[in-house]
Length: 386
Image 1 (cartoon, rainbow, N blue to C red):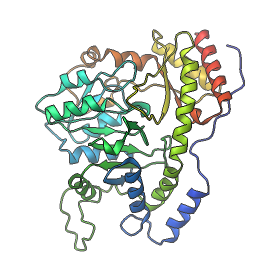
Image 2 (cartoon, rainbow, N blue to C red):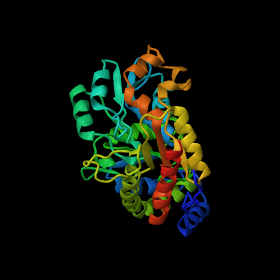
Image 3 (spheres, rainbow, N blue to C red):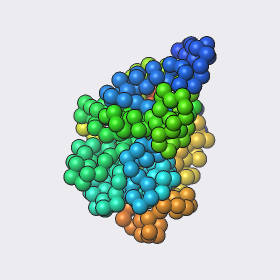
């Protein structure tokens, strides 16, 4: 392929004097943990308000957010949690670490979100939670999933690690009636290096989660009366101060990413053999954590070679998630009583997407239009060379 100049992309994470001021504010308040300071409390109020939820709880990371929510929803030994087969491994491992069997189901070939019919077919008397993942910021079909939850009595847990600020038919994530978990890992749309949060639609679950994330100890306890079994998932004050600044610029970044994806997806769709991630008009605000596209028919080896070529050309490109049942980690504990091939047989879309999908980090969508044209040209050259 002909060498092209590497496009210029913004760095990530982004920060300015807002983060600096917040860190100094946290430092000088004299208390650096949430039980003595005010940064975590303030961040929780702001994050909950931004997403339309009554309650938010900040925790140590997104994986812990999922694990804590699952525990509060009753997942544990003897139960099952339905997860999309195409997702980051934390979605399943959060359940498996509690002793709940993770049951992978297939995803839609266009949106990459959990397939509702496959989910319904997987519900059993042991199913305790259904966990849709809003892949790359595109909210899953919450109408159909909400009806399935209502019909079966199985609660939803939204894995919203990619979906900060996203909306479904005008509703924010916190207005969709179920618990939602977020990540603030270094690459996410908001970051403090690590961190996570949960949104709760009502008080009872929130209070239970607060106790469990703080060693089972009530806020005002002075005599070590730990009420329930818990652990320490408390977020520190410094991380919360950074996240408050990150939240303030999220709207502008989301608007820009939406504009840029309209351009880039059109350019990608014009390349022979390339199919960008689809959309759902009901998901009327997509936060675009990733710019994802498929090359149907390519082998996994060919896809991996393509990613290497894109990286060499200066693009922040990655191979898509491996199907969770195609990892050794998935089978270590609390796995379904079937073989990987049996799971694969009922997850053909996941098999294909895991093999032929590529994603670009969202900082690409914060770049100039010129950079996006250059990005598409590099991808076209790399695909043609293969």
